[in-house]
Image (cartoon, rainbow over all chains, first blue to last red; front, side):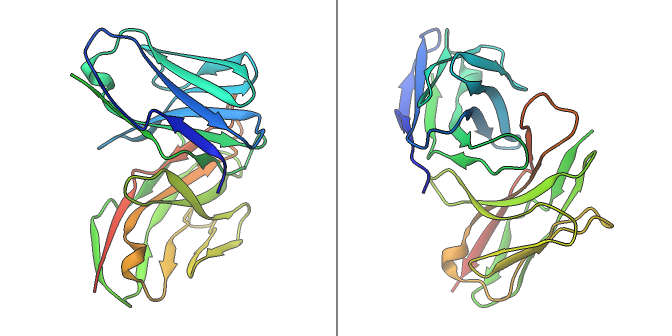
Length: 113
Length: 115
């Protein structure tokens, strides 16, 4: 299994608070991704990274920011959490560009009350 | 636009039954096709893949053939087990007109296998 660790695995917080989710990989893969998974919407890409300090938006990036200061770590931040951001968040990595499978972490279940 | 369509289920089968989960796609160029599986409480795992027309991907008794003429990538297994109960996602990547390695996932098909 690909070495991907997401932390925390579960979090409950209140509306308006900042939240940071961490993805750590031991595979030295260049590409990293953050998705959210919601019933009826499947998997939707939030942000992705194609190298250290190189990030860009996915299809549902509003309300989220990311940072990648090291190859192995990709952080997802909710600056001011809202109830609509209650979801399961998955980090994924891939080795190279184009036609490559992605490998997923086990997810973070985030509940915003 | 590019998309993946699959039966959403839930699909319920008895153990040792034959499984088919249909997947069709719309895409520009020549994408690669994947099946992922998600067990409860876990992330998606790659099950199999095919990178060009007529390729057959296979793993753990599951098979799927890349059919360009019908734009399909149906997942099959001859005899399912209780341990195959999971959600299955069809996906494609390698699109021509994207700025990143975009993966498009289908909505997922929930499979429940009963003894």
